[in-house]
Length: 146
Image 1 (cartoon, one colour):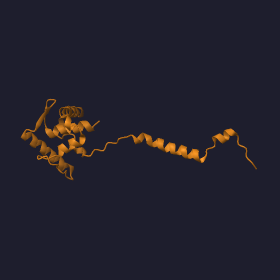
Image 2 (tube, rainbow, N blue to C red; image 1 turned 90 degrees about the vertical axis):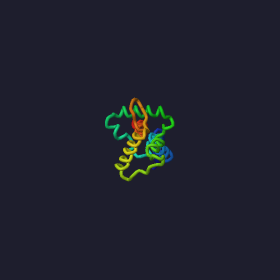
Image 3 (cartoon, rainbow, N blue to C red; image 1 turned 135 degrees about the vertical axis):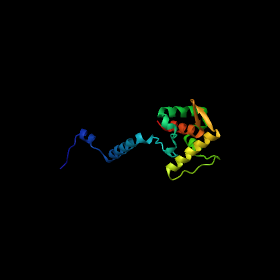
Image 4 (cartoon, rainbow, N blue to C red; image 1 turned 120 degrees about the horizontal axis):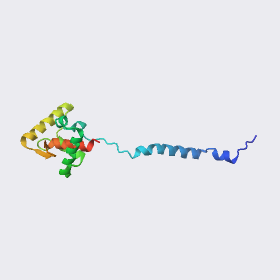
């Protein structure tokens, strides 16, 4: 018993090669939209930003504005990793190892900022007199918050 299939039906029948090509193309097309995504994973702790005391009196737009102005004044610090390193450096320029407890590291940063004010390590940005670390925190905040 022989079956007769019209040329149109033969055209519609899928062969193994066509099936594999279509399946592979479908899988690739599903991955293409995500292949170009550059998911940003910062190499620093997110609690480095924003500055603790300044964020209580300034809104997000003001903090970002201060940060971008600071970056305009200090072109050599326009890198997130570099800013994070500078923020976490101690008085001698050596990197401070963050505590396991975020609150302890925040307290260390607050103490560092107080010492900078006492020693005169301040900068004026958009009329604000800020400790160097505070200004760097604003800059890092401006680079990371969309």
